[in-house]
Image 1 (tube, one colour):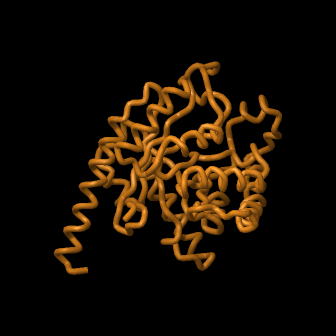
Image 2 (cartoon, one colour):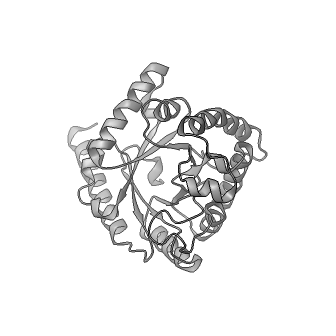
Image 3 (cartoon, rainbow, N blue to C red):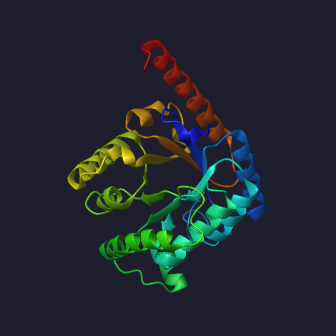
Length: 273
Protein backbone atom coordinates (compact mmCIF):
# COMPACT_ATOMS: atom_id res chain seq x y z
CA UNK A 1 0.00 0.00 0.00
CA UNK A 2 1.33 3.46 -0.86
CA UNK A 3 1.80 5.71 2.15
CA UNK A 4 -0.63 8.26 0.72
CA UNK A 5 -3.31 5.57 0.71
CA UNK A 6 -3.00 5.08 4.47
CA UNK A 7 -5.39 7.28 6.47
CA UNK A 8 -3.22 7.09 9.60
CA UNK A 9 0.05 8.22 8.03
CA UNK A 10 1.77 11.51 8.63
CA UNK A 11 3.43 12.58 5.39
CA UNK A 12 6.73 14.40 5.04
CA UNK A 13 8.44 16.08 2.12
CA UNK A 14 11.12 18.48 0.99
CA UNK A 15 11.17 21.64 -1.11
CA UNK A 16 14.32 21.95 -3.23
CA UNK A 17 14.71 25.66 -3.94
CA UNK A 18 15.87 26.36 -7.52
CA UNK A 19 18.04 29.40 -6.79
CA UNK A 20 21.82 29.71 -6.43
CA UNK A 21 22.27 26.17 -7.72
CA UNK A 22 22.58 24.02 -10.84
CA UNK A 23 20.27 21.55 -12.52
CA UNK A 24 22.78 18.80 -11.78
CA UNK A 25 22.75 19.58 -8.04
CA UNK A 26 18.95 19.62 -7.93
CA UNK A 27 18.72 16.33 -9.77
CA UNK A 28 21.10 14.72 -7.30
CA UNK A 29 19.04 16.10 -4.40
CA UNK A 30 15.61 15.00 -5.58
CA UNK A 31 16.84 11.56 -6.62
CA UNK A 32 18.36 11.10 -3.16
CA UNK A 33 15.21 12.38 -1.43
CA UNK A 34 13.07 9.94 -3.41
CA UNK A 35 15.33 7.04 -2.50
CA UNK A 36 15.35 8.06 1.17
CA UNK A 37 11.56 7.71 1.37
CA UNK A 38 10.24 11.26 1.11
CA UNK A 39 6.50 11.29 0.59
CA UNK A 40 6.71 14.44 -1.52
CA UNK A 41 9.26 16.62 -3.33
CA UNK A 42 8.61 20.23 -4.30
CA UNK A 43 10.16 23.28 -5.92
CA UNK A 44 8.94 26.86 -6.07
CA UNK A 45 7.58 28.78 -9.04
CA UNK A 46 9.52 32.04 -9.39
CA UNK A 47 11.85 33.50 -11.99
CA UNK A 48 14.40 35.17 -9.71
CA UNK A 49 15.95 34.41 -6.30
CA UNK A 50 13.75 35.24 -3.34
CA UNK A 51 16.63 35.99 -0.98
CA UNK A 52 20.40 36.37 -0.98
CA UNK A 53 22.12 37.41 -4.19
CA UNK A 54 19.37 38.80 -6.46
CA UNK A 55 21.42 37.84 -9.53
CA UNK A 56 22.16 34.26 -8.48
CA UNK A 57 21.37 31.41 -10.84
CA UNK A 58 17.71 30.44 -11.10
CA UNK A 59 15.57 27.96 -13.06
CA UNK A 60 11.95 27.72 -14.19
CA UNK A 61 9.68 25.42 -12.19
CA UNK A 62 7.57 23.45 -14.65
CA UNK A 63 10.48 22.53 -16.89
CA UNK A 64 12.25 21.22 -13.80
CA UNK A 65 9.14 19.31 -12.72
CA UNK A 66 9.10 17.35 -15.96
CA UNK A 67 12.68 16.24 -15.30
CA UNK A 68 11.89 15.49 -11.66
CA UNK A 69 8.95 13.35 -12.76
CA UNK A 70 11.22 11.28 -14.97
CA UNK A 71 14.02 11.06 -12.38
CA UNK A 72 11.89 9.84 -9.45
CA UNK A 73 9.58 6.90 -8.85
CA UNK A 74 7.86 7.20 -5.48
CA UNK A 75 7.30 10.68 -4.08
CA UNK A 76 4.43 12.99 -4.93
CA UNK A 77 5.57 16.10 -6.83
CA UNK A 78 4.55 19.73 -7.11
CA UNK A 79 5.28 23.41 -6.66
CA UNK A 80 4.91 25.40 -3.47
CA UNK A 81 3.17 27.00 -5.26
CA UNK A 82 2.60 27.99 -8.89
CA UNK A 83 1.95 31.69 -9.45
CA UNK A 84 -1.51 31.79 -10.96
CA UNK A 85 -0.82 34.94 -12.97
CA UNK A 86 2.10 33.42 -14.87
CA UNK A 87 0.16 31.03 -17.12
CA UNK A 88 -3.24 30.74 -18.72
CA UNK A 89 -5.34 28.47 -16.43
CA UNK A 90 -6.26 26.06 -19.21
CA UNK A 91 -2.61 25.78 -20.20
CA UNK A 92 -1.57 25.22 -16.58
CA UNK A 93 -4.11 22.41 -16.22
CA UNK A 94 -2.79 20.77 -19.39
CA UNK A 95 0.83 21.15 -18.25
CA UNK A 96 0.03 19.54 -14.91
CA UNK A 97 -1.87 16.68 -16.58
CA UNK A 98 1.04 16.06 -18.96
CA UNK A 99 3.64 16.00 -16.18
CA UNK A 100 1.30 13.71 -14.21
CA UNK A 101 1.60 11.20 -17.06
CA UNK A 102 5.40 11.45 -16.95
CA UNK A 103 5.23 10.89 -13.18
CA UNK A 104 2.74 8.00 -13.50
CA UNK A 105 0.12 9.77 -11.40
CA UNK A 106 2.18 11.51 -8.71
CA UNK A 107 1.45 15.19 -9.41
CA UNK A 108 -0.19 17.96 -7.42
CA UNK A 109 -1.58 21.02 -9.21
CA UNK A 110 -0.64 23.64 -6.63
CA UNK A 111 -1.48 27.32 -7.13
CA UNK A 112 -1.51 30.62 -5.30
CA UNK A 113 -2.40 34.18 -6.22
CA UNK A 114 1.22 35.34 -6.65
CA UNK A 115 3.14 37.98 -4.73
CA UNK A 116 6.76 38.46 -5.91
CA UNK A 117 6.71 41.77 -7.78
CA UNK A 118 10.01 41.29 -9.60
CA UNK A 119 8.63 38.23 -11.42
CA UNK A 120 5.79 40.34 -12.78
CA UNK A 121 7.84 43.38 -13.73
CA UNK A 122 10.70 41.50 -15.41
CA UNK A 123 8.41 39.13 -17.35
CA UNK A 124 5.82 41.69 -18.36
CA UNK A 125 2.84 40.47 -16.30
CA UNK A 126 0.44 42.94 -14.74
CA UNK A 127 1.19 43.01 -11.01
CA UNK A 128 -2.05 44.70 -10.01
CA UNK A 129 -2.95 44.51 -6.34
CA UNK A 130 -3.30 41.68 -3.83
CA UNK A 131 -7.13 41.84 -4.12
CA UNK A 132 -7.02 41.82 -7.94
CA UNK A 133 -4.69 38.82 -7.99
CA UNK A 134 -6.96 36.98 -5.58
CA UNK A 135 -10.00 37.78 -7.73
CA UNK A 136 -8.14 36.37 -10.71
CA UNK A 137 -7.34 33.19 -8.80
CA UNK A 138 -11.00 32.82 -7.89
CA UNK A 139 -11.96 33.20 -11.55
CA UNK A 140 -9.26 30.81 -12.78
CA UNK A 141 -9.75 27.87 -10.42
CA UNK A 142 -13.07 26.78 -12.02
CA UNK A 143 -11.43 27.11 -15.44
CA UNK A 144 -8.66 24.73 -14.34
CA UNK A 145 -11.21 22.23 -13.06
CA UNK A 146 -13.19 22.46 -16.27
CA UNK A 147 -10.13 21.97 -18.46
CA UNK A 148 -8.95 18.97 -16.42
CA UNK A 149 -12.34 17.34 -17.04
CA UNK A 150 -12.02 17.92 -20.81
CA UNK A 151 -8.46 16.73 -21.36
CA UNK A 152 -7.85 13.50 -23.23
CA UNK A 153 -6.38 11.44 -21.80
CA UNK A 154 -7.24 12.33 -18.24
CA UNK A 155 -4.59 12.60 -15.54
CA UNK A 156 -3.25 9.23 -14.40
CA UNK A 157 -3.54 9.99 -10.68
CA UNK A 158 -5.99 12.01 -8.60
CA UNK A 159 -3.85 15.16 -9.10
CA UNK A 160 -5.22 17.13 -6.14
CA UNK A 161 -5.54 20.88 -6.50
CA UNK A 162 -3.57 22.59 -3.75
CA UNK A 163 -4.08 26.22 -2.80
CA UNK A 164 -1.24 27.97 -1.01
CA UNK A 165 -1.66 30.95 1.30
CA UNK A 166 -3.20 31.99 4.58
CA UNK A 167 -5.33 35.08 3.95
CA UNK A 168 -8.38 34.55 6.16
CA UNK A 169 -10.96 36.44 4.10
CA UNK A 170 -10.26 35.29 0.55
CA UNK A 171 -7.52 32.67 0.21
CA UNK A 172 -8.92 30.32 2.84
CA UNK A 173 -12.41 30.88 1.46
CA UNK A 174 -11.18 29.78 -1.97
CA UNK A 175 -9.47 26.77 -0.39
CA UNK A 176 -12.75 25.73 1.24
CA UNK A 177 -14.49 26.01 -2.15
CA UNK A 178 -11.94 24.53 -4.54
CA UNK A 179 -8.96 22.87 -2.83
CA UNK A 180 -8.17 19.22 -2.29
CA UNK A 181 -5.06 20.29 -0.36
CA UNK A 182 -3.94 23.48 1.37
CA UNK A 183 -0.48 24.77 2.28
CA UNK A 184 0.78 27.49 4.55
CA UNK A 185 3.81 28.09 6.80
CA UNK A 186 4.72 27.57 10.44
CA UNK A 187 5.15 28.10 13.32
CA UNK A 188 2.57 25.73 14.83
CA UNK A 189 0.56 28.55 16.39
CA UNK A 190 0.18 30.27 13.03
CA UNK A 191 -0.76 27.02 11.35
CA UNK A 192 -3.34 26.15 14.00
CA UNK A 193 -5.01 29.56 13.71
CA UNK A 194 -5.29 29.41 9.92
CA UNK A 195 -6.32 25.75 10.00
CA UNK A 196 -9.28 26.62 12.22
CA UNK A 197 -10.32 29.45 9.89
CA UNK A 198 -10.30 27.01 6.98
CA UNK A 199 -12.50 24.66 8.99
CA UNK A 200 -14.89 27.55 9.63
CA UNK A 201 -15.10 28.34 5.91
CA UNK A 202 -15.77 24.68 5.17
CA UNK A 203 -18.67 24.75 7.61
CA UNK A 204 -20.12 27.81 5.88
CA UNK A 205 -19.98 26.04 2.50
CA UNK A 206 -21.30 22.76 3.87
CA UNK A 207 -18.07 20.97 3.01
CA UNK A 208 -16.47 18.22 5.08
CA UNK A 209 -13.14 19.75 6.23
CA UNK A 210 -11.57 16.28 6.15
CA UNK A 211 -11.73 16.43 2.35
CA UNK A 212 -8.87 18.98 2.36
CA UNK A 213 -5.35 17.76 3.10
CA UNK A 214 -3.50 20.12 5.48
CA UNK A 215 0.16 20.75 4.63
CA UNK A 216 2.73 23.06 6.18
CA UNK A 217 6.13 24.26 4.98
CA UNK A 218 8.82 24.73 7.63
CA UNK A 219 12.47 25.73 7.83
CA UNK A 220 15.24 23.30 8.68
CA UNK A 221 15.58 24.91 12.10
CA UNK A 222 12.01 23.89 12.95
CA UNK A 223 12.13 20.15 12.34
CA UNK A 224 12.32 19.00 15.96
CA UNK A 225 9.13 17.41 17.26
CA UNK A 226 6.86 17.58 14.24
CA UNK A 227 4.13 16.31 16.55
CA UNK A 228 3.60 20.01 17.41
CA UNK A 229 2.35 20.47 13.85
CA UNK A 230 0.37 17.24 13.85
CA UNK A 231 -1.35 18.34 17.05
CA UNK A 232 -2.13 21.66 15.32
CA UNK A 233 -3.87 19.79 12.50
CA UNK A 234 -1.08 19.25 9.94
CA UNK A 235 -1.09 16.01 7.97
CA UNK A 236 1.88 16.72 5.72
CA UNK A 237 5.08 18.54 6.79
CA UNK A 238 7.50 19.87 4.15
CA UNK A 239 10.99 21.13 4.99
CA UNK A 240 12.44 23.84 2.74
CA UNK A 241 16.10 23.73 1.72
CA UNK A 242 18.51 25.50 -0.61
CA UNK A 243 21.89 24.67 -2.13
CA UNK A 244 23.95 23.03 -0.71
CA UNK A 245 21.06 20.63 -0.29
CA UNK A 246 21.35 19.20 3.21
CA UNK A 247 19.00 16.21 3.40
CA UNK A 248 19.60 15.73 7.13
CA UNK A 249 16.41 17.61 8.06
CA UNK A 250 14.43 15.38 5.67
CA UNK A 251 15.95 12.30 7.27
CA UNK A 252 14.85 13.61 10.67
CA UNK A 253 11.31 14.12 9.38
CA UNK A 254 11.23 10.61 7.94
CA UNK A 255 12.36 9.11 11.26
CA UNK A 256 9.79 11.12 13.21
CA UNK A 257 7.11 10.18 10.68
CA UNK A 258 7.87 6.50 11.08
CA UNK A 259 7.77 6.75 14.87
CA UNK A 260 4.40 8.51 14.73
CA UNK A 261 3.08 5.83 12.39
CA UNK A 262 4.27 3.09 14.73
CA UNK A 263 2.63 4.82 17.69
CA UNK A 264 -0.64 5.14 15.75
CA UNK A 265 -0.58 1.46 14.79
CA UNK A 266 0.15 0.44 18.38
CA UNK A 267 -2.75 2.55 19.63
CA UNK A 268 -5.04 0.86 17.13
CA UNK A 269 -3.92 -2.59 18.28
CA UNK A 270 -4.41 -1.60 21.93
CA UNK A 271 -7.86 -0.10 21.47
CA UNK A 272 -8.97 -2.66 18.90
CA UNK A 273 -10.19 0.10 16.59
